[in-house]
Amino acid sequence: ANEAVDMYFDGTDMWLAVTNSTGAFAAHQLDIPKDALPGIHWVTAVGRKTGDAVQVAFNVSTNWSQYGFDLQGRGRNPYENVIDPTNVGTLDIAWKRATGDAINFSSPAVQGGLVYIGSTDGKLYAINAASGAIKWTAATGQAVISSPTLAYGNVYVGSNDFKVYAFNAKTGARVWSAPTGAAVTSSPTVVGNTLYIGSEDHNVYALNAENGQTVWITPTGNRISQSKPAVAGGVVYVGSTDDKLYALDSGKGGVLFTFSAPSPIKSSPAVANGVVYFGSEDGRVWALNPNNLDGFPWRYSTGQVIDGSPAIVDNTIFIAPTLNSETIDAFDIGSGKLRWSVPAPSYVDANSIVIANGVGYLGTEDNLGGDGGGQFSAFDLKDGTVLWTAGISTNSRPAIANGTLYIGSLDGNLYAFQLDAGFNAVYRPKQTPPSYASLHPNYRLKPIR
Image (cartoon, rainbow, N blue to C red; front, side, top):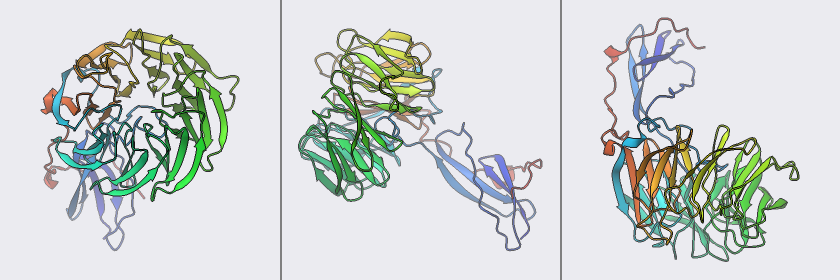
């Protein structure tokens, strides 16, 4: 009762509370320091007068829950604080895990200590993020090209067997499956209790994420091939091979507008500051203002096919054109001015860039679609300088979370890379809690009321 209580994060006194006559104090938010590395940390409360104390472990971690990281598809992890331009060159393989066949376009998702990825062997894999051990597999009827999405304790994915699936993320038990009229190579986006996904039967589906029941179906003029819906402001944006970008009402599925590229759009759109960015097979990067379709901010012609998806950070958009002269391009997000362009290391198919902590990541494959000539690279966002490479052939968009880079490969393996071959792995932090005697109060703190 009536005790001053210091609240520590690891060894730092974060704030001071005063208990009431029953020994309780009001709930307060403890902001974790930005530089706290992923892994186990300790929160400790110590009474200044009595010395009474209690500790609880807190796991600092970031989820990469879907292709493109967020609902807007921007391809950026803003919380990564382990790998940066100064140390990315020391990345080395921590582990690799084989699936039953090639990992073709399906990109990893990371959550709760597991990595999820689809394989052309028709299975979805849940793999221990620290060790690479397989936690479970779940079978679909055909190849899984779609990338998994995690939400509400489930993992959602499309399959070439004409279905969308929901599996329990912990056990792999099937929760539901929902039919479409063709293969599902698009990836799910879950907002609220609704899942949005495209199918090669030309339709966009909105499904109840809890039970798979159809909410609405909206047709497009051709296949939706790989393009993952982005959702922002109650609008679903998705590309179709009928040469159009569709903007749909997220609640009712009605077409709000379409925009002609004019060429197939397999690129997954990204939304930032109210503007929609995407690539098309006529070689253009588009910036589209949904409120002014005639006066769109800009477009830029690269002269190459663009099936990959953009990545956005601050005032720059990154994308990788393909076909005859593979490049990595960086544009000013407001004007569309080309900031820099550098050669990509190998053939870019629908490969998409991801970015984290000043580093961009892009995989490529050999131009025959095999597993021998591709290369994965990490580059400096400032000028495209290559900082690290690995001999991996891939068209899967990577994921980076908690100091680990995950890459699905056409050789059938999921790779995990960490600094110094894992010797500095953030999954092995010192987990011993600080002793109470080592914690010293900050007497300049004023009590939080």
